[in-house]
Length: 337
Image (cartoon, rainbow, N blue to C red; front, side, top):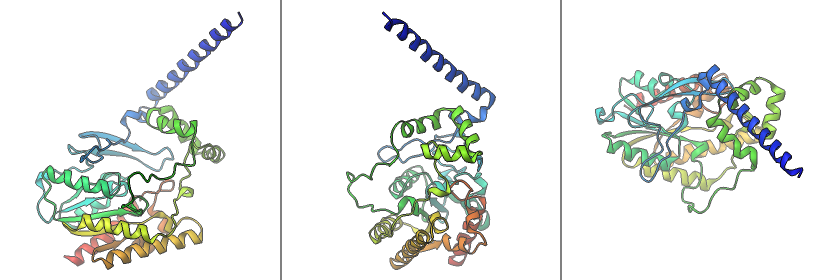
């Protein structure tokens, strides 16, 4: 008969914890409305021929719990972070397609290299960038043309960290599962997208080195600079990536922009040496097959401290990085034209 009181107590404790959690969560939202998850940056996953896009006609906020950035992101009626109407484009305008680097992850819209190029050249630059690899880029270009884009000049921005892979692999050849698994790996993405309190707590943890170290060990936080992915040199992946880019480029007057890996400047000496070997091999292969290519890595290397082109706790380009990239691209395009 003792089982019934235990069950009742367990039920009451569970209800109390749930009510407390809800109270804390909504109390956080009332006190810190900026942390409301529904207002944070998100994307609508593509389906069929429709690419991954931003939610149309939506104003969102992109904020990082490390304090690196807090910016506004406006998506237009097409789902792109761009203020221009595709139907107003003309042959000779530039169309940029790329991933998170080119969408301007963490920077205000006017700070992006595409906006800086447009201001310098006096020619429209339509930014069609959206998270994804070159397979998604192809869908983006088709989607843009169906919506009135007159694409003749293409700026194809390729992030090495996303696109350096074998595009010819069969679909069933899935990547190996993440080494992190279990309840932490399951809960984390849910908390990140649904909990203001989680965001508040992790913001505090990032400011305390001891707590931050423990949270990384448990998997609740990702190591920032320490988490740079260093890939082994692979001629197979380099050739596959350049072939995929060539198929995208063949219909347009295309310039390739290499969004290099931050591994060029972070990691051990051997890791950086391998990253540079890969980077130079990619540039050489693009030139070998006759594509125009802009080496942003070389532009960053000319800075006194290339690491300042990145956020302190994020692998994306800082406003300084976008300005450095813009200078290199503007110089190339002016020379070409």
